[in-house]
Image 1 (tube, rainbow, N blue to C red):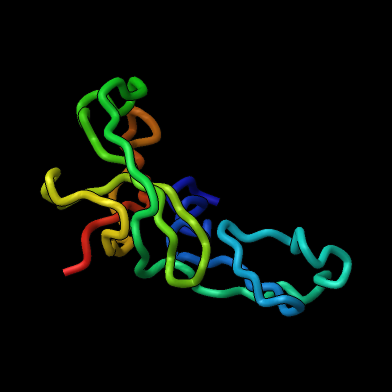
Image 2: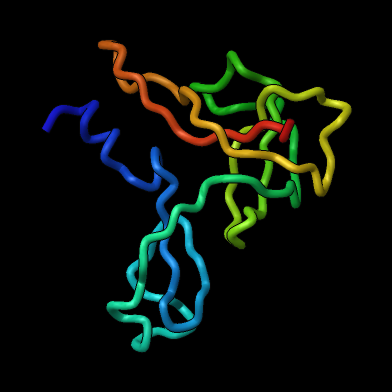
Length: 133
């Protein structure tokens, strides 16, 4: 399998696939094989569910001292978002005015370039968030 195809087939990364417990209804992202609440009762009852959509910022921070791969982006804002489906996701906030960032801000997940894997230029993508229009 080629490297680009391997990355494209990571369903939770590109298609926003999580799971919902068929026993209690809790939703999880990334997917897990067993519900931590229902345990054995959830075996075989974890159903795929699309997660990525809209949510609200529950906390945020501005990063001034990034990891080496992200130095060109500094400073940037990271947010923790409670999605409408009930799961929490963390990601970078893009396409926004810094003075308008705040708790409860409505955002949507967007697929964006995260970086390159090697000198050969294999690009990989993932989720970031932007304010809802």
